[in-house]
Length: 262
Image (tube, rainbow, N blue to C red; front, side):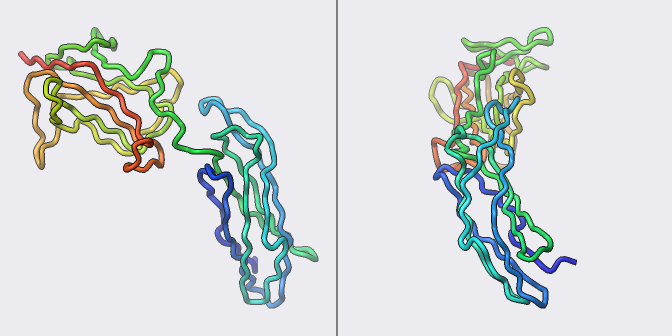
């Protein structure tokens, strides 16, 4: 049975837009004898480039331990600080990682703590990319196929004749909102969509067809907006984005949606 524990057991470094990550690890020795560990780093492969078809590379991170070796008394604990800096050869948005290695002097079990991080600013990843079809676009279902309506469209709201937002999600989004505004006055009418944790599309050409049935919440009730001219404003909050930071949002505004129920 192991007489050593190291916590935390893994390091999720997140984004390193300030170029380095500093963490503290605690080694506990439950044996009856002191143990001295030498600390080192083992790098792992990194991934970068197109997330749908990533590339792989190897460039060692800079890892500094303080101290570089540590003696843990019997029945006691000791702490070490590690500073991890991703290799400058990596492009931004590269995912890097490796293993912090604790090797006991005189032999015995070697312990490894995995770590991983992203070099750069995670919020620089664009969610709503245009893909080959120039999305997002306003869509309309015609004979079973979607057609874009770049200049707006009229919908009867009967059956499938309702507005669709056709959007390619190149990356996950923390929150998707679609707000409806009166096209003539700019007045907010309803929030048509409020969807947390939107996935990305599975391919570079895929897209989501997001319908709006002409309704939205009004307090505890769901109401239908009257016939008229409307604008749909799509807002996506980037993964791990801060809702209060405007740069963490992406937005798109539709052409005029005319609702003309018979």
